[in-house]
Amino acid sequence: MFTIGIAGGSGSGKTTLVNSILERVPYDQISLLTQDSYYKDSSHLPIEQRRALNFDHPGSIEWDLMLTDIQKLKSGQEIDSPTYSYLTCSRQPETIRIKPNKILLIEGILILTQPELCEEMDMRIYLEVESDYRLSRIIERDMESRGRTAQEVIKRYYQTVRPMHEEFIKPSRDRADMLVMGGGLNTKAADFISSAILGKLLAKPPVAYPNFPVS
Image (tube, rainbow, N blue to C red):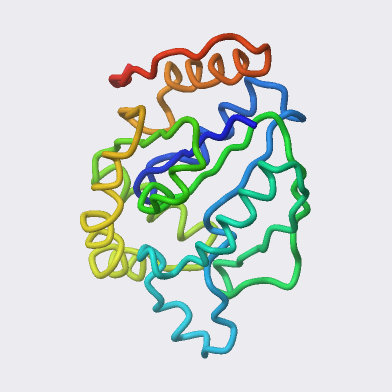
């Protein structure tokens, strides 16, 4: 199993890049694991406290479970991945069955902060995006899919998202093999990563990982 980690700040386009990759390679030969599924359960807290949680701190993730699931997939076992709702800010009772495949994509803002997870990755990618662009994307996303007002999003950004990015996420790029400038909209990067995946599927030799400027 060839394992690829895709990290970057909130709003950097990780999901966009993953979707671009999935459009270019055989979908049935790729498994996808998202960090957001492994947020710790907070259903015991009142909804007001749940919405105020710091989702950008490494302590918010159940890393042991995520690492165990990755290792199970790499050993050929199926897993039942947890699910998490940003609307209720709690883990859901439903799980998602994920089967092992030739390629495993792991996506999340904090995954490169964990050395144990990095050791499981054959290719580590970090999306480098200017903070102003990321903020506009966060506002749009959180209003559309997470039930927040623009004022709530901006307040949260300056209270937790930005400080956690500077303290934890940005430094984690030093563990990346490849920096993708401009984030998920960088089509050249999507083409290159997809070619690397296709090469692995066809058992071609490994390639070097360059850094990509904005097109």
